[in-house]
Image (cartoon, rainbow, N blue to C red):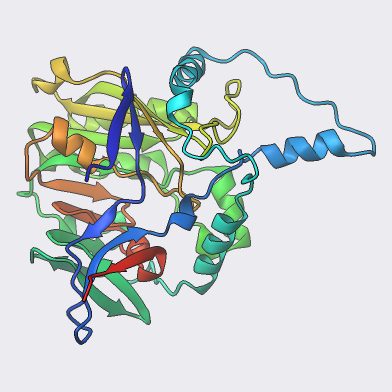
Length: 359
């Protein structure tokens, strides 16, 4: 089952809660699992993030703050807002107006983070070369490992120790831990919900140029910070030897199809993120790759949990059986080498709903 469907011109609806298929619990006596999907409670995002603040301001009987007047939207935000309006009716999974809180999702994630024993500083590697998924235990936690994966838990400064120069990839995905003030504040309060941030120079130093062939696609998830946007197109891609061939947008919506926050004026929080896509000069992709697409999904309540793009790209833009690499990964995907400091975090069994095979 594909994790996406086309819902309009240049627009796709993504499904985060993709399954870990062919899962066989071979370390449990006579126990089989038909499939595993991320727990649906993670995606119980029914209310926009800023709705509660507005409600409080409107209902307060004390001295009210003057509501800020929204300024003009920049051209990119206006374009995304118009696309959202055009397909809004196709995004409404939940039309029950009595369901309007995100409490269950947030409490589930808080409980998971509070009890998580994941050691991000630990260096290890592993693989599952079989054609079925397995369950494995480590440091008191249980993890689901899909078939056909390789993974490395390490900081990116040791990248060349684990990924040899002769390894070439069809698709390379990066979700960098961008340096920003918000994450610094979060980390100061709760180290378990923060992560090790990198400067733009640290990210650019990753030697991806060694791992490209003539048609490799490089995807970079990017925040809306102007300094990060400029770094991808003007610093990272030229250093890695790729040209910008597309800029796609992930638009985060509630179960009722509303954006998770307002479309805002420049420099303010937006309900979307960018995905920059590059290909080597001379690649056929430089002329044929779609310059723009709008990807919609209800986001996971887990911090920085991105929707999977592998089904979409392997069905349309890279060859069958593509050899993929994901950097700063926190989950595993068949056919992919995953590298990051929390590479198994989202494979934790406690995050999944398991369907047992019929006896």
